[in-house]
Length: 337
Image 1 (cartoon, one colour):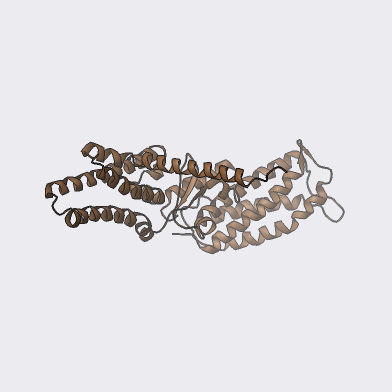
Image 2 (cartoon, helix red, strand yellow):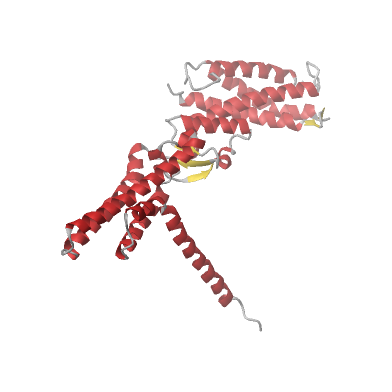
């Protein structure tokens, strides 16, 4: 069962309040010693403590939540209660007196307690609201650096790694993170995966095949059916090699990151790349066919090494653009007087 929006909202607010107190307490400890004006500074968290008290009461009244949440609202309530009591004892009264002895050890203990509560509530908030926080306005298929995005909410590496693990193992979250490059890919719904990934590739395959048959039947009608069948066979072998190439790439990724071992999912994640390669593959096939350079081995190799072929072309094209740009800069540079 998914946790209610109210539970996650309250947990998120606990995270914000504990972050505020955590930051202040850290600033009052310099080189292992308490700063001289700590009493005046501690008064700044009085409102934060009151808001924590309100959130504690809210969470106390909430019922069952998702089993995915490691730290339940009741446990959070206990943490807040203990923390609230300790912080209130350290607040100076009107005469500047405190109820207990405050030293560096007290600050260190409170900072550790706040860090634990901040970490746990931050993890829960980010994981449970991941789609809304990161993916709501992002188109399926887009990719971006995971650490840069989640770093706006979490700064501890263990917390960030925990979120990454949860994202990769929860079917309800429409994202996938490569654990090596730490790049996050936004995923579409099942329908959008078909429309945006699989159908365009199927359309490229079918279009190239129909073009081959159409050419053989209407423009080279004297050509024997055996030759046409050979060409169709070469075409299917080419796409077979391309399919093996896609599967190999997906399985290579899957051996290092179990979340990307799913071949259809990998095709969706890399849809733009594969569609570009598919279009280049069809063009390359027709070019080699017109030069009579195709045989079963060459056709399969063409499909299997499609990325090398297309990247070589695009790299050559890009270098020409860069060369032209440099030449244009020289021509447009101001002439010496």
